[in-house]
Image (tube, rainbow, N blue to C red; front, side, top):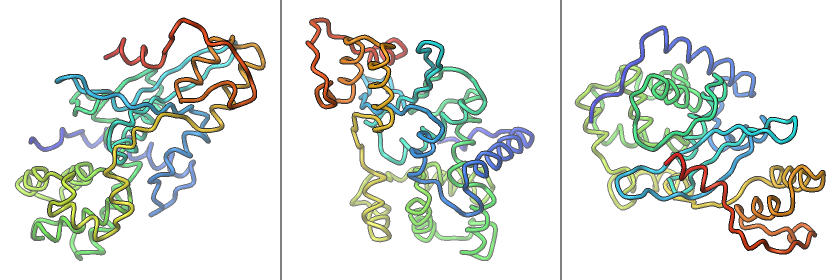
Length: 289
């Protein structure tokens, strides 16, 4: 595994400034962790979250998340599709990654689980990591724990326990934290390779056992593929009101609700099922797969 692709100082400074601005605007000051609140942030920003599990096909990786824009009448709707067939910590990171594309207005976008070296994807990954665990906070936590800004003299087992504690507190993926260490120059390339070679998803392995001992509930949650199908009640209400206001017809209403395993009669409406099987959500991703 090669060390992370490096951004130059100007790019990093620009991303950190953007993160500082957005965290402050969102109400996260200092050492406040966003963690699972990332989903509440989407709702507060009127970004409609669509959760759906899409498995990888062969060697082609499945998407992680997708940002989509759509017009309904004169109103622009913003959707974020999230692949829930992935581990929960990676879902959180994927949402943070897509928020970079939203804040920098790069338009509709689809990201995959593979590490992409294109400049915009490297920037989005750095933004996500900074948003979830800012560099100044990470550096402070390292110094507070080890009385040094460097981790190069710390033995591997101690590092693993530290990573597990950070993961349970800040809800980043294990590998994202390891990459953060490398990005800020806290570990050597040899340490990076050693830490990155560990199978962090092996729940009976050394790191898995450490994580469960530190916080069993959160560690299991982060390492679970949720496979959720759904969206928030607020977003369902938008769909219902669009139907009630004749913005969408019965077929569109029925098919949109069916994406989330819901039916019109769940909300007091009786509609005949159309013979045509329309699944626009999956078609969107299949077209871009």
